[in-house]
Length: 199
Image 1 (tube, one colour):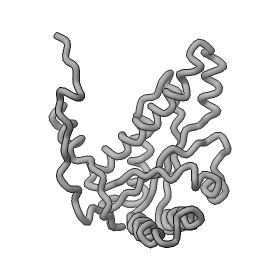
Image 2 (spheres, helix red, strand yellow):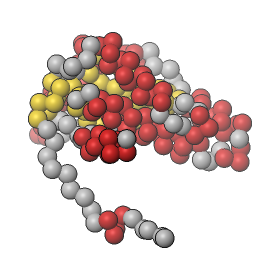
Image 3 (cartoon, helix red, strand yellow):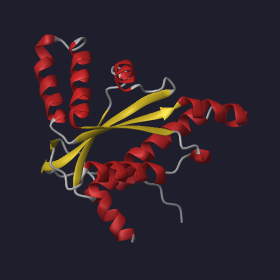
Protein backbone atom coordinates (compact mmCIF):
# COMPACT_ATOMS: atom_id res chain seq x y z
CA UNK A 1 0.00 0.00 0.00
CA UNK A 2 2.80 2.44 0.84
CA UNK A 3 4.37 1.77 -2.58
CA UNK A 4 1.01 2.55 -4.22
CA UNK A 5 0.72 5.81 -2.32
CA UNK A 6 4.26 6.89 -3.19
CA UNK A 7 3.67 6.02 -6.81
CA UNK A 8 0.53 8.17 -6.78
CA UNK A 9 2.44 10.99 -5.07
CA UNK A 10 5.00 10.86 -7.90
CA UNK A 11 2.16 10.97 -10.46
CA UNK A 12 0.76 14.18 -9.00
CA UNK A 13 2.44 17.03 -10.83
CA UNK A 14 1.66 20.57 -11.91
CA UNK A 15 0.09 20.09 -15.33
CA UNK A 16 -0.50 23.27 -17.33
CA UNK A 17 -1.65 21.90 -20.69
CA UNK A 18 -5.17 20.84 -19.73
CA UNK A 19 -8.26 19.99 -21.78
CA UNK A 20 -11.95 19.61 -21.06
CA UNK A 21 -12.45 15.89 -21.79
CA UNK A 22 -11.92 14.14 -18.46
CA UNK A 23 -12.79 10.47 -17.74
CA UNK A 24 -15.42 11.36 -15.12
CA UNK A 25 -18.88 12.86 -15.37
CA UNK A 26 -19.52 16.17 -13.63
CA UNK A 27 -21.35 14.35 -10.82
CA UNK A 28 -18.45 11.93 -10.41
CA UNK A 29 -15.81 14.65 -10.23
CA UNK A 30 -17.92 16.61 -7.72
CA UNK A 31 -18.25 13.49 -5.56
CA UNK A 32 -14.51 12.82 -5.80
CA UNK A 33 -13.59 16.34 -4.70
CA UNK A 34 -16.09 16.30 -1.85
CA UNK A 35 -14.81 12.97 -0.55
CA UNK A 36 -11.17 14.05 -0.76
CA UNK A 37 -11.86 17.22 1.25
CA UNK A 38 -14.04 15.39 3.79
CA UNK A 39 -11.28 12.83 4.46
CA UNK A 40 -8.52 15.46 4.79
CA UNK A 41 -7.49 15.89 8.45
CA UNK A 42 -7.72 19.20 10.29
CA UNK A 43 -6.61 20.39 13.74
CA UNK A 44 -9.22 19.65 16.41
CA UNK A 45 -11.26 18.11 13.57
CA UNK A 46 -12.20 21.71 12.81
CA UNK A 47 -13.19 20.93 9.20
CA UNK A 48 -12.53 24.57 8.36
CA UNK A 49 -11.98 24.03 4.63
CA UNK A 50 -14.69 25.30 2.29
CA UNK A 51 -14.88 24.59 -1.43
CA UNK A 52 -16.38 26.21 -4.52
CA UNK A 53 -16.40 23.85 -7.52
CA UNK A 54 -16.75 25.60 -10.88
CA UNK A 55 -17.62 23.64 -14.02
CA UNK A 56 -18.57 24.53 -17.57
CA UNK A 57 -19.33 28.21 -18.13
CA UNK A 58 -18.92 28.98 -14.43
CA UNK A 59 -15.29 27.83 -14.63
CA UNK A 60 -14.72 30.06 -17.68
CA UNK A 61 -16.47 32.93 -15.91
CA UNK A 62 -13.99 32.74 -13.05
CA UNK A 63 -10.99 33.10 -15.34
CA UNK A 64 -12.63 35.99 -17.21
CA UNK A 65 -13.26 37.66 -13.85
CA UNK A 66 -9.59 37.10 -12.99
CA UNK A 67 -8.53 38.58 -16.33
CA UNK A 68 -10.59 41.72 -15.65
CA UNK A 69 -8.93 42.20 -12.26
CA UNK A 70 -5.42 41.58 -13.56
CA UNK A 71 -5.91 44.03 -16.43
CA UNK A 72 -6.22 46.76 -13.79
CA UNK A 73 -2.74 46.12 -12.38
CA UNK A 74 -0.60 44.44 -15.06
CA UNK A 75 1.20 46.88 -17.41
CA UNK A 76 -0.26 46.79 -20.92
CA UNK A 77 3.10 45.79 -22.42
CA UNK A 78 3.11 42.62 -20.31
CA UNK A 79 -0.58 41.83 -20.32
CA UNK A 80 -0.62 39.59 -23.41
CA UNK A 81 1.49 36.94 -21.67
CA UNK A 82 -0.82 37.12 -18.65
CA UNK A 83 -3.89 36.85 -20.88
CA UNK A 84 -2.44 33.82 -22.69
CA UNK A 85 -1.85 32.12 -19.35
CA UNK A 86 -5.46 32.74 -18.32
CA UNK A 87 -6.63 31.35 -21.68
CA UNK A 88 -4.84 28.10 -20.88
CA UNK A 89 -6.62 27.92 -17.51
CA UNK A 90 -10.00 28.49 -19.19
CA UNK A 91 -9.35 25.51 -21.47
CA UNK A 92 -9.35 23.13 -18.48
CA UNK A 93 -12.45 21.20 -17.41
CA UNK A 94 -13.05 23.04 -14.16
CA UNK A 95 -11.69 24.83 -11.13
CA UNK A 96 -11.73 24.15 -7.40
CA UNK A 97 -11.53 27.23 -5.20
CA UNK A 98 -10.28 26.52 -1.69
CA UNK A 99 -11.39 28.69 1.22
CA UNK A 100 -10.96 28.63 4.99
CA UNK A 101 -13.92 29.57 7.17
CA UNK A 102 -12.73 32.21 9.62
CA UNK A 103 -15.82 31.72 11.79
CA UNK A 104 -14.48 28.26 12.61
CA UNK A 105 -11.05 29.69 13.42
CA UNK A 106 -12.46 32.43 15.66
CA UNK A 107 -14.75 30.00 17.50
CA UNK A 108 -11.83 27.72 18.28
CA UNK A 109 -9.76 30.68 19.46
CA UNK A 110 -12.52 31.55 21.92
CA UNK A 111 -12.98 27.96 23.07
CA UNK A 112 -9.26 27.28 23.51
CA UNK A 113 -7.60 30.63 24.29
CA UNK A 114 -4.25 29.06 25.17
CA UNK A 115 -3.98 27.93 21.53
CA UNK A 116 -5.47 31.10 20.03
CA UNK A 117 -2.34 32.11 18.12
CA UNK A 118 -2.05 28.66 16.58
CA UNK A 119 -5.49 28.27 15.04
CA UNK A 120 -4.86 30.58 12.04
CA UNK A 121 -1.66 28.63 11.35
CA UNK A 122 -3.45 25.29 11.71
CA UNK A 123 -6.15 26.56 9.37
CA UNK A 124 -3.46 27.09 6.73
CA UNK A 125 -2.29 23.52 7.35
CA UNK A 126 -5.85 22.31 6.82
CA UNK A 127 -6.27 24.00 3.46
CA UNK A 128 -2.88 22.72 2.30
CA UNK A 129 -3.83 19.17 3.20
CA UNK A 130 -7.23 19.55 1.50
CA UNK A 131 -5.54 20.87 -1.65
CA UNK A 132 -3.11 17.97 -1.69
CA UNK A 133 -5.88 15.43 -1.07
CA UNK A 134 -7.91 16.75 -4.01
CA UNK A 135 -4.81 16.87 -6.22
CA UNK A 136 -3.96 13.24 -5.40
CA UNK A 137 -7.56 12.11 -5.95
CA UNK A 138 -7.61 13.77 -9.37
CA UNK A 139 -4.20 12.32 -10.27
CA UNK A 140 -5.38 8.83 -9.33
CA UNK A 141 -8.13 9.20 -11.96
CA UNK A 142 -5.66 10.38 -14.59
CA UNK A 143 -6.80 14.01 -14.33
CA UNK A 144 -4.17 16.74 -14.35
CA UNK A 145 -4.19 19.88 -12.21
CA UNK A 146 -2.26 23.00 -11.31
CA UNK A 147 -2.59 25.33 -8.33
CA UNK A 148 -2.87 29.12 -8.59
CA UNK A 149 -3.05 31.99 -6.10
CA UNK A 150 -4.89 35.02 -7.45
CA UNK A 151 -6.27 35.81 -4.02
CA UNK A 152 -6.84 38.40 -2.61
CA UNK A 153 -7.10 40.17 -6.00
CA UNK A 154 -10.27 38.28 -6.99
CA UNK A 155 -11.82 37.74 -3.56
CA UNK A 156 -14.55 40.36 -3.63
CA UNK A 157 -15.66 39.56 -7.17
CA UNK A 158 -15.80 35.85 -6.33
CA UNK A 159 -17.80 36.63 -3.23
CA UNK A 160 -20.35 38.64 -5.22
CA UNK A 161 -20.54 36.31 -8.22
CA UNK A 162 -21.13 33.08 -6.30
CA UNK A 163 -22.65 34.37 -3.03
CA UNK A 164 -19.68 33.19 -0.99
CA UNK A 165 -20.12 33.86 2.76
CA UNK A 166 -18.08 36.73 4.18
CA UNK A 167 -16.37 34.40 6.64
CA UNK A 168 -14.80 32.31 3.85
CA UNK A 169 -11.25 33.43 2.96
CA UNK A 170 -9.95 32.37 -0.45
CA UNK A 171 -6.62 30.56 -0.25
CA UNK A 172 -6.00 28.89 -3.66
CA UNK A 173 -7.48 28.01 -7.03
CA UNK A 174 -6.93 24.62 -8.68
CA UNK A 175 -7.53 24.04 -12.40
CA UNK A 176 -8.15 20.47 -13.47
CA UNK A 177 -8.65 18.71 -16.78
CA UNK A 178 -7.42 16.20 -19.30
CA UNK A 179 -3.63 15.96 -19.51
CA UNK A 180 -2.70 17.25 -22.96
CA UNK A 181 1.03 17.43 -22.22
CA UNK A 182 2.80 15.80 -19.26
CA UNK A 183 4.97 17.72 -16.83
CA UNK A 184 8.70 17.84 -17.38
CA UNK A 185 11.24 16.01 -15.28
CA UNK A 186 11.19 16.96 -11.61
CA UNK A 187 14.45 17.76 -9.84
CA UNK A 188 15.15 17.43 -6.12
CA UNK A 189 17.51 19.18 -3.75
CA UNK A 190 20.09 17.02 -1.98
CA UNK A 191 18.69 14.94 0.89
CA UNK A 192 21.41 16.30 3.19
CA UNK A 193 19.90 19.78 2.85
CA UNK A 194 16.40 18.57 3.65
CA UNK A 195 16.57 15.79 6.20
CA UNK A 196 18.16 15.27 9.59
CA UNK A 197 18.22 11.63 10.69
CA UNK A 198 18.77 10.78 14.36
CA UNK A 199 19.06 7.04 15.17
